[in-house]
Length: 406
Image 1 (cartoon, helix red, strand yellow):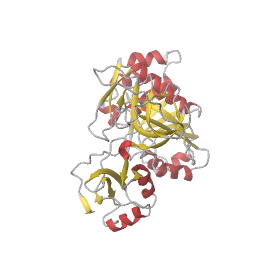
Image 2: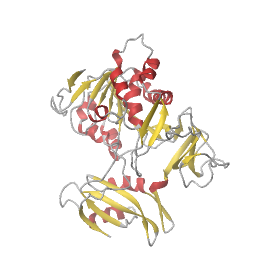
Image 3: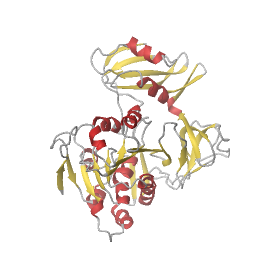
Image 4: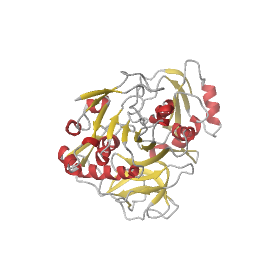
């Protein structure tokens, strides 16, 4: 095992700020996806130096346990364990690799922790598929590897885009960036990065999926927000018509006429299963979509992020994106809540950029521009999120209010 310090380059942190420990491919696979040193510390794996005569399929499958247990992010409640076979993992890594392979990447930089399915696939197995040198960086601050005018693949989580904006000169010294994003709604910082960067230098690919279902669909991002296209081994499945619960199984109703809003139910050979349970054939995702044809759809929102107030439905993810564009703050989040008067409602948490930087009145004025009125606005020190950037619906009570109203 060797170490490599990221070199000093313009806006990149000085040497010694981040040391990437070189780990062999064998060590990486043997450590397991949940190992603290694989998730919490920076590392480098040279898949590109694997002997050309080695069958990488056999090498990886032999290096993994027969089944892999991965945890949900805990964004909607307690984290739960879901199991996949190593063959399922390797097959999905191939699908993700195919999304960026056309850009001919020469190196990969990942920010996604391997303890979750997206990180296990994209940080560990995708570079193995493509035989790329792979750097993993788990922290917001610190140095980036030397870009060396290479064509890079970047495995992004929501805060990655802010990092790339801060390191604009690093981006400019790459030959090309293929950015793969999953885990959450695309942040506004992603669009800002694309606007600020030379046209054609970055291609952004989004993946639609979950821990339980794995990758469901993908799209290459564009300003007109093209529809999502199902992965080749995924198809729409019938649903029971209720759309109230997620889980396996399906009723006899059709998946919804073209253009109609319908719960997203899919059939896939890569569905995860709970330890001790039989693998499921069908999964109801908890998402609402509008099917355009047998292979494409538009996303209307998640069941747990849609609230109906006095007959009007509010998509909290879209509202959050709109408010972020006009309200300067360090972070903000809308939380769905039950309300004795209206049944459903939402609260707003805001982290000001500094003490006294915002008042509740200013926040309400910004939100009011979008014809929305939170039940309560709270100014807080921080917002509790998972390590992939997802909002935890159950916020820890230790958050301290800088101000609140009702």
